[in-house]
Each structure stands twice: as C-alpha cells, then as structure tokens.
Image (cartoon, rainbow, N blue to C red; front, side, top):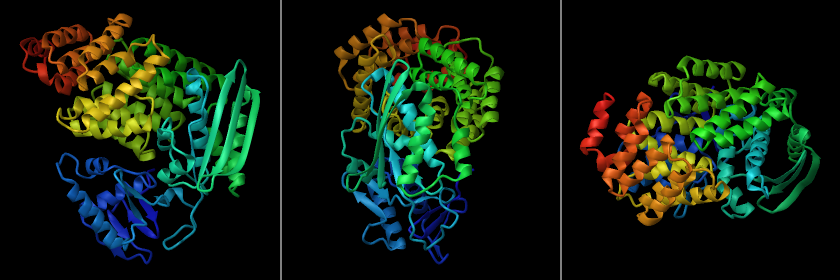
Length: 545
C-alpha cells in the first residue's frame, strides 16, 4: 500500500488527511498550496527539483509565476522554523531540494518516531559501466536488481534507480552525484560479458570523503550472476554494519526468476520494446514468450508481453483480442501483486479496451507502489494524457520519464511537441531528444525509430534540411511503418508543408488503426498547422470523428 505519512526532521506529514505535525504532535497549519508543495518535495526528498516541475506539480492547469512558488517556499520555511534553509535548500539556478533524510514512514524502522535523530545510512546504486554498448541492457538490469535487493533492507535508505540512473553520462564526480541525490554512499561497478563468462567489478565508496570501503571483482560463469548479486548485496550491508533479516532475504528471492536464461530474455525484451516499432515489438514479444516458457511464474515477463500486445493491437492493427491481453495482465498480478509494472500493464490493457477510468485507477495503483515507475508514468502519459488531449499531463509526465530513463528519446520529443511554439524551454527538450536519438542511431543504424524521432526534433529546432535528411533515412529503412509515417506527418506539419503532412497521415491511418489512435490524431499538437485542411477534416469524418 502507498505510504500515508512522511517524516522528516521530526515533522510528520499526513498525506491522507492533508495535515502537518511537529515533534510534539502539534499541528502546523499551512495553506493548501503550500502543503501540496511540501508533499511533493517530501516524496522526492534528496532530489533537486526545478521550479518548472514544482509549478507543474502544484498548480496543474493553472498559469502562475515564479512569485507564487517563492511565496509558498517562504511560507513553509517560516512555519517549519527553517530560517537557515537547512531543511529546504535553494540550489542556485536549478531549483529546490528537501533534505534527503525525509522518507515514507513505511520505509523506516518501526522504532522511528517524532523527535528521533537517528538516521539510516543512505546509498545509491549507479548504473554499471560496460565497454560494449550492446551489453548495456544487461549491465542496467544487474544494477537495477541490486538496487531492488538493497531496498528490501528496512535499515537502509536506497535511492530509486530511476534517479541514480539519470546521472549516466553526465560526467559528475561521485561527491557531486551524492550531494544531488542526498546520499552518503555510492555503489559503482562495471560488467563485461564474454561468451559464457561474466566479469563484475564493484566498489563501495563513502562519497563525501572518497574513501573506498570495499571493492571486489567477480570472474565467473554467467549462470552464477544471481549468486554474484547476492554476494554484492551481502557485502554492502555488512560493510555498512547492517544485516539482512530472514524475511528480507526471502523477499529478495521472490522478486526474480530462478532461471538465468529467462532473466536474459526478459531483460533483452524490455530493451527492444522501448523502440515501439513493429519489428522490435514482435522481437521483444518473442523474448518475453521465451522467458515465460523457461519460467511460467515470471511476472515481469508477462507484463512485458502485455506492453507488446497493446502496441501491436493499438498502433499496428494486429488481431489480438483485448480480453486475451487483459488475461496476461491479470496473470502478472496474480504472480506478483506488488510489481508496479504489472499494474501499469493492466492499465494499458484496459486502455486498449477503451475503459479509461479503470485504466487510470490501474496506473494510480502502480504509482502508489512506486511513484518513479518508468512504465507507469510513461504509459499513463502516452495513453490517457495524449488521447484525452491533456497537454499539461503530457508535458509534466514526459519531463519525469525523460529524467527516469537516460536512453529514452521518445519522452523529450513529446515534451517539445506539447509545449507552445514560443515556449523558451521547447528548444532545450528538442535538443535532448535529438542528442539521444543521435546516440541511438549510431549504436543501431538499422533501426528507423531514432531517425524519425530525431527528424521531428530537428524540425522543432528549425533545422529543416537536416530534418528531411534524417526522415529520408528512416523511410528508407521502414517506409510502411505506422510510427515512421505518423512522425513524417508530424515533421512536415511542423515545417508548414501541409500537403506532405496530410499525405503521410492518410497513409499511416489506413483502415486498421484503433479508436485510441484516432483520438490521438484529434489531439496531436503537431497537427495544429493542418487542423483546418480539407483533407485532414475529411480524414476525421471518414473514420467517424
């Protein structure tokens, strides 16, 4: 269940009742917006949050200035006696951060109470490095699983991998990363696969001093990868003078498959599914199917299969029954009701069946388990946000997923798409999209997805010649793909070439797209330039919109 209370520096924030108490259990009265702002800071304790994100989260669908935010911050500091800004820090030119000692009550020891000064050790597991870009799917999976295992300890505060992974490729020092994340320790590592062998090197560092607390290299058969993960977890908690309780050890074992082969197939499937093109979705589904054959109790693989089936049905007109997809989602939940990806998958399945309210409830359930779940945030924005035409929801959600997954070029493209043309932040998000697409295209030149997304980003940036060149490469690779043609229509619409935009849109729609896709077209921000075009209107009428 989601935590209903958050404690920080002796204060208790009751999220269910919307009330704040001090160490003596006396209520501190805050204005409603100030309380909502404090709750958002507390849920994201230890992370620097930009002014824009705070405004988006607190004043949804309302236009306010930075002054409103500043007044609320001042109100909170005054009521909490935080005149020296030790609790809520102002980070120059970046935003605000609540002290990282804040945490949900359910994540704290049962001995914790108001007024206690004992803090749990805090750690972030950084993305493991690899020399081969084609092995990143495996190295990321290992680091993610170690993060999950460490988080089972109630005596350790572990930063979500979604935040720590966002530092990948930024070139910051360990102490800078730790300061931004608000943690004392960092676990770093590297992985190298060679045939049936795997080499894992790890090091535990006290970030503030740079002291190396522990380091070890494992050079073993790849079948021993789960044992290596367990040994790393044990070493970390031992060097931090902690220990795993028996029930915590059992919980670690329950979160994964016993089959190393199934694990490999599931990790690879998730990496492939990110591209959202039909060939990659079909291949990803095969990976998930193979994982389930090897381990019929693998909930994450079932959730991955749902994602593939939903996109294949909704975008590509594949004849997959909605009930069959929902059955897969229900099986994932039966196997692991605590898995946020399973709830998100069920939300997507319900969305494909046009049960929007039920889908929204499923997404909310996933986010209550893990507010930083990439799947839950991404799917809720991509489905309900876009189809319902909620631009604010789309922008705020995809800003978050951009941070949560450094290799995602789709999310920053959506942020730029749904921002106003004159928004000063729009070029920044378009540039993020293009840089990520450029890297992905270099790693996988046979894949059209980063090319047509990069082309659209270049159109946002006004680089018309380069945008056309990138789109031509995408069309040469996959000319009949729905998403390729859809993004071609978007690009030409942004460039003001309305006839080409409508031609590609007509080709993309065909006769087999779903009602959800048609609603998506109705609310597509990039089609503003062709919205009054006679052929665009005729296209909508021909499909009953």
